[in-house]
Image 1 (cartoon, rainbow, N blue to C red):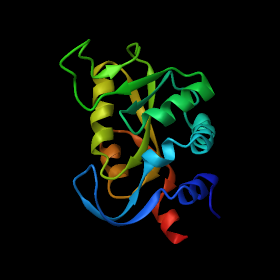
Image 2 (image 1 turned 120 degrees about the vertical axis):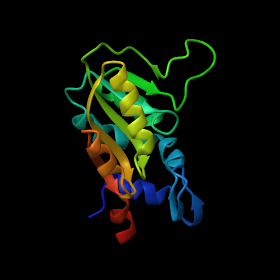
Image 3 (image 1 turned 180 degrees about the vertical axis):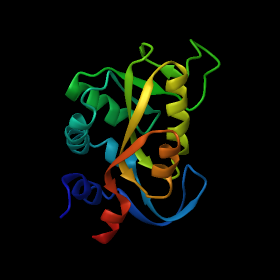
Image 4 (image 1 turned 90 degrees about the vertical axis):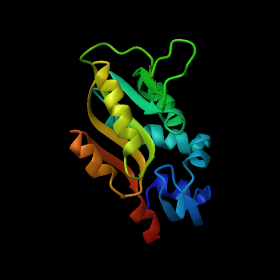
Length: 172
């Protein structure tokens, strides 16, 4: 049985077939266009409803720019939990912060990611938040491509919880 998120991903045309280069540098025969999905209000509403119970108890939710920002903000609004935005790299101007938002030492942080492949970006984000004193033990991904992210995060002591696995979409 397909979940509402799976239906929306397919209905929005967010699952594409062809030759694509991924952020991880890998090449793929398919692409899950999460920017397309995460700029759709219906998708964001459904995603935030699915994410809300999974972030319960966290003091902060966090996401990596750019793709994770819409679901992080939507979930923050849904739950009232403040959020952090983790930059991919420090800017040479302004505050130069890698992590934007208020984080107090020892606070629990749950990451939200739009899509994972190898998990490299998420691992960097987790490390950045931990360096600031955040406690990260869980990350939730809207779509897991099932190409090593779960294992990479487990090495960091972080459980990866996928809302949708790409194998579920491909079964359709």
